[in-house]
Amino acid sequence: MNYAYRRSNTSLIWGVLLITIGIAYLLQNFNVFDIGSLWSHWPLLLVVIGIVKLFSPENRKQLGAAVWLIFIGMWLYVSIHHLYGLSFSTTWPLLIIAWGITIISTSFYHQARLSKE
Image (cartoon, rainbow, N blue to C red):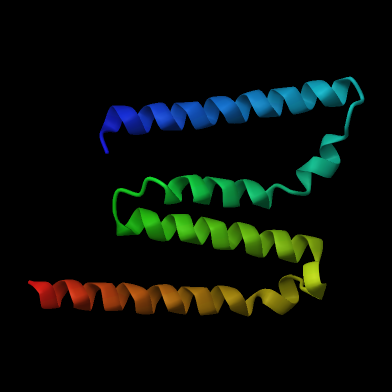
């Protein structure tokens, strides 16, 4: 993917994000809704950013970063809102498991790559 195309995608995403934030604050000023209730869903922003990054990874490292963003965003959302009775104190081992999976998958990738050479 060329640099100019990637840069225009990034600019588009940031532009839409800023417009959305501006509209949200404007609607709050007109008492249409309360941003405080919307703010509690901020981890979903990490999920959205991760999903966007999934569609245009330039290499394996960027793909891994996108998956991590999605995982962290979902973990934070579930833990903050205590979905299914889960919280930070009960779900923190998931971070260690995910880290281990990352290390193993990276190892397999490097071994497969070395065997092709």
